Length: 391
Image (tube, rainbow, N blue to C red):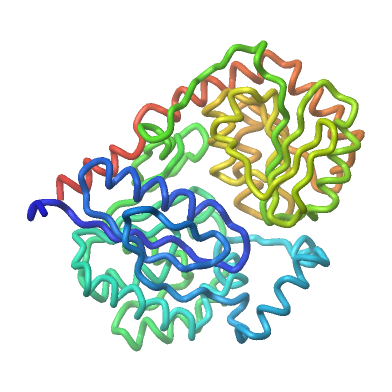
């Protein structure tokens, strides 16, 4: 092995809930770094979002339980919450709260996960630890005196929104480890040697120093930008683990488009696969390929989803629900004239159909989507690779 090859350990955030963002970006980072000649390993929990990365070693990382409850209780309680739609009733106001509800701020879990990551660092001896929204990775890297890079988004910064009262257990551990206390867990982002934002200033206007890289898919997946309009005959739907229950999504989308000229594809881990006329449901679809033949993308406002839609010039109907980050993302796209925000209270067939028809008919929406997509494919992962190789 080339002794000058830089080593990188990627650590994505873990959760029992479906949260595709960190896991998807972990895959893109890992494969992109490897293709660029870096030695890369992951420290990734085998949770519902986990996917084996061929040829890439993965170190053990504990899976957190919601709010730190015992695992045996979580295994019973969490599916019940999902099935009853109780998670849809909760308003999430800051990334602190996301970390709290997923169990990533539980004192016991922080201690275990930091030790898991430290063991991985001691075995690999990486030049860089890359945190994909995993706060324990920030702590482990500092304790092991390893350079730390991280992904950041505008609404996850302390300056946007925070909940200081949730940092009590974290601060007790920081003191125990000889590190400085924080007023919010989100201050840990300030420990990073460099922050990378997988977006553009038009969508995420930071005031502090960050490096914008656009889409992480640039240089990885082939992006056929601006496909022939005559080939577009699909409406794609991905709502993740959000405010609108999966069964309601299926019911209202079916009623909205059952007699339409479009093929409807819904991706959800909470629905049974089916093919019924022009309606198709599966736990996942290859939206990266299908977006080029889509007239509309209905999604929850997650960062990965909105970026994918823009990359392929597809207008978006976004239903961010009660989640702060998704609300910010969706409103940014709406302000840029590339989509519309639909309040979750209005998620019914008539409103969906009427709004969708307006978006599909709008040349301005398509043009704005393509313009933003063009800006998103300028830089990409090589920006991070260059930063690693310069260190």
